[in-house]
Image (cartoon, rainbow, N blue to C red; front, side, top):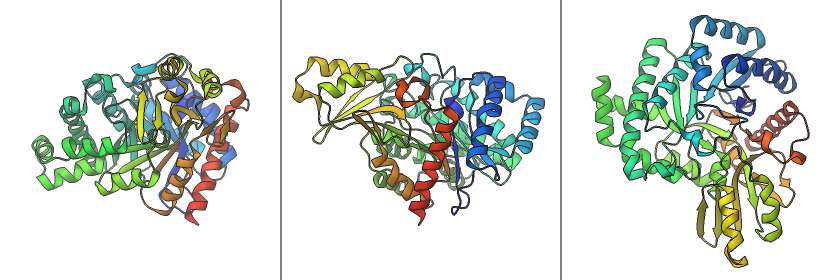
Length: 405
């Protein structure tokens, strides 16, 4: 939906909260859940969809007759698509994924082909007056190599993607952009990592020359294409887990000339007092489906763990003084639930971020993303999922209005 008072700013939620790997399953989720959310949140206005499409679903939707049928459904239902979560390529909700969720990554040609497919779909279904976005893996998981080692190869594939997006714009008149999503324990963990990657590998003079040779564009125009079509998806949970501040995160990217093409409105877990009682309670969040990276702050030092069980195991063998001053956990929890037992969510990052977005033109695509609903401890998800999603959207709208006032 278009946010009142902020022309051109679109807010939705990501359908990766619902299980579904085929197009038929995705469409059924839209009919069953998205339409119900729309009825609760904006019954009299168009409602945007944040699609999550697996590679299988994307191939099925790309068939011309299926696309035509979907466009008709959107028109009849008062819905539109402006963004796709192109991060998980294969099965996601309901099956253990952990670090496999990053593969194929931007070191593999399958990631390029998949993203090309998503871009063509968006060009076909997004409204003519709305630029569309695809959020994607932040290069690769950290175990695949350092930024210096993998940066050149990732950037080469991103140039191919930028050339495709430019060509799509030239042939269809539709703008589709690619937003890389920094995430803990990836080669781009923070906005600082993203800024360094873009400066050293994507926007460097050699990279611009490569895109110029690939497309026949002048060097100046090739740089414009890179800056316009490739940017960052700022996930609020990820940045908060990394102990970033909203002002620094947005300011760093803006100052580097990197577009924030999408913001995922999300909240993680804060453990402000990591004593034995709190860490014992935290074990209930150490589930087997998703990766839950942990960042522990001790004074000015940050210690990172690839998954919550790793952090809990390290704490179990250490002294009380080794547990740090605060833990932050990559576990997307409901935005409106500030407290979860002995824990807090990261509203202290999210609320000022939303206020900043409401008062500036930093980003136009906002997507609530609490995909971990099904694996939350039961006491935090007793209400129906549609009711929870509507409540998150309403909570977000309220903070945007406050920020804009």
